[in-house]
Structures are given as C-alpha cells and as structure tokens.
Amino acid sequence: MASDLTRAGKRVRVLKPVISGYSEDDMEDSDSAVLLRALGRQPTPAAVAAMSPWRFAAPLSPDMAAAREEKTIDFDALVRFCRDAIDGDDEITLIEGIGGVMVPLTESHTVLDWIAALDIPALVVVGSYLGTLSHTLTAAEALRARNVSVAGVVISESEDNPVSLAETAATLARFLPGLPIRTLPRTPSADAKAGNLCDLLSNP
Image (tube, rainbow, N blue to C red; front, side):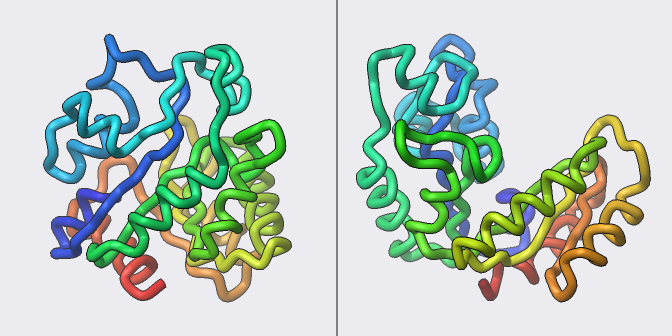
C-alpha cells in the first residue's frame, strides 16, 4: 500500500509502532522491514527502531509478548509517538496496528483504545479467507461504537479464498452501506493498486 501511494506521487510516512514475533536475527524479514522497503528505504536496525519502537520476540498479543520480557507498553507514550508523526509534514501517515481491533495492547487497553485515542480515520484492511465477513463486520461495528470514523475497507486477497473477491465485497457492501470497499488481488498492476487506494486515503 505504501509503495503504491508513493508511486502515485504522495509523501507517505508509515509507522508500525508495536510488533511481536520480532527477532533481530531475522530483522530483514520483519513487517517493519517490509514497510521500509515499500518506502524505498533500507531496513537498517536504526530505521526499524524508529518505525517500531515497541518490539517483542514472542509471537503473541502485545501485552503477553511484553510480559514475557518483563516489560510493558506505555500507552500514553505510544499515543504521543503516533500523534507526533501525524502532525508532521507528510501528506499521508499510515499507522499499522497489530492484530485485530480487540487485540489486548496493554494490561488495560486494546488496539481499539489506541485507535480511538488518536481520533483519526481507520482503514480496515482484511483478507478474503473464510470468516472474513464476520471479522470485518465486527471490527466495523466496534470502531463505530467508539465514534471512530471508518475511511473504508480494503480486501486484500488471501492465498485461499472460498469465493471471489467481488462476491466478498458485494456481501460486505450490503451490510456496510455507503462505506467505500476496495479489493486488491494478489498480483494486480501497480496502477490499479494505487488507483484503488488513493481515493480512500488522499482526503480522509
């Protein structure tokens, strides 16, 4: 997504503030490294640390992963870190969460609390796997219950799909009237990908 927007001429900043299942030995295969390369940047240790200050080894929810290392996530510091980036000079700031909206983040906060605290539109990115309809509708309902504006839904094609992307999108559209829904095939053209997303993110 970041690379598509960059190719479309947008100044994009991407954050992945919290990451679990992270290993310094496999840093170049981490989600943070993937995001950095999408921006045309090298995934150096310093660049990864700047993008993802809260890094944990265990592939668990952030609260559990942090506890394994006898650490905690400072929720207020996390919100400040993101807010500072949002207030920067980039046209678009993308902040990738971790897991679903109800994933525990700290002992008393979920990812949803984090999104609500930032008071910015949320873009719900989902797969097309079996179960995605329930997961997507539940996430949208939870966000709206906290007065979070949902910018749209992006269905990123999963490796295994029970039905076509178009059918998944049509079903979601019935239950989310008026909400923009875009599909991303696993191997679309760059122009198609950029065009699919720019209208959702250029004017949040």
